[in-house]
Image (tube, rainbow, N blue to C red; front, side, top):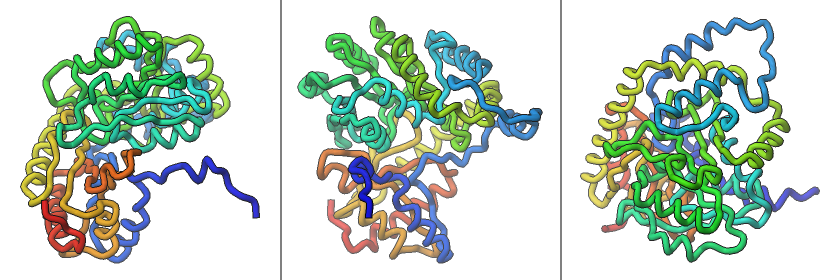
Length: 400
């Protein structure tokens, strides 16, 4: 029998999706499952987006340009200007979701064996994309005990080797909800400039910053404009994860040429998704404000409820719509599986993402989960009731 690739063996399963079959089986048994595992908001997609999809007036659904529709890129350029991000249309390449933007950035910037430094916990698929590119993620741990603040810049510098090609940040952060300060961003800028590195900056949650401080993009940092590779997506911004439209933005000319080769190899990003995304950019400010305020309320509600459950702790996330929670359990992976296979309370259970999948350092996150507060407050309230009962009943409960 032919053997499969070592790359495939090394590819990690998603901590967000690897228990989906167990959740589906629980629902098939008649159990209501509160899905806190994935960033799939229940907020309605903007009406303008739905109407654009409903009224597509084309006789042929053709390939789009490999770099994406010009009209969409123009609208995105104007959108970025509202955040004082000064980029040209030619700096914007449309991708099949933010995920493809990360993958193409890695493929275009990194050779096999090259290294990227990433604060952990980190979005799990970064590791998968690095493996696909033959590159290595080198993580630098942050801790729930200090709210996942950025480790000292000296810790980053200790990890830099001749194979280091870049630093990757997610700001606001998935999975922690951490929001980098200006001081931290400037320290990263200085490091990137000093060692001539790329700064990969995943900024898909920029609309959801809760501190009141100005949003800081990697493109706001002086003197490294051509070293920045910005990753973006419309999925979370407009609650349309399924259209799979993202963007890679860079001013580095040779990098753009490299990325375009991969774009041409996959032909074009989704045409229908681009039509919907373009219409979404015209979404009224009222919609965006209502969505923002809803997440503010959900965040407060969830954090308050979690920290009242004996043994649970979560810091207050300052951005995005995720939080990492420490639970009084021996093994969060086992607990999450147990909730779906062996437990229900009044016909209900919870689906969470084990946080160990967001770390690469062995042992880290063993008693943590990531939760997405993407459900309405009524469902969140029920989910927290169920979680409290689950923790009481779990055989591997610990005292903390």
